[in-house]
Length: 290
Image (tube, rainbow, N blue to C red):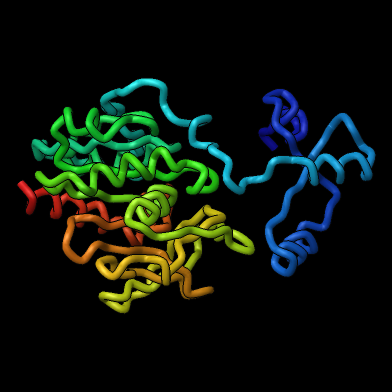
């Protein structure tokens, strides 16, 4: 009743595509059966035949580098303050004590909520672009390296996996590495594993994941269309989490090196927050390596 314009008018004003008058449940059931596929939406060409041909001719996701379209251009220190919700919740955010630790975060399409989770623990964060060489990262003398989320096929971002591999192979010091989502997949490639496109991706904030160490089930937020091949991982890497819907790999950890990653989003905002403990695990790992 307080609205000042229609949803259609809002979308048009911001140049955002929208659809209506389709059976979304039927579409969902079709994707579940046939798998994720190419599609097209147009406000200009309304010919079904032409639109189908355009969808068929589109490049798709396999092998494409979408990270280069979303990564930062410049290295920067993340110092942004999180939104103060005290006026709504009545609770003040405690000021984290500076740990003296520095994390260099690769930006493959990073979310600010991830950076806030790191800085809220008193960790300083320096963000670098996806193509940043391993040697440049090491010049910052990081206590930890973070591999962010991002869009598309990890095999289309081979340059990123190559730099991660160089960081892993550094003789000394052994710097903790933590990856999320695309960062998890790129880490798997760097370690010698393989990835593949899922029939249909994991989407939404209610994905059940089992922690194999604790046997606890975590409700997680996910948004990805590719996954790590479980049987492709080397013997020195163990699977730590699995998806209870399809048994795909949701987490892994190196048996000797301070390296771990998860496929889902422990930083999910507004939630769920079942897996935020992973940031504390990363902090503990960095302190142990000091």
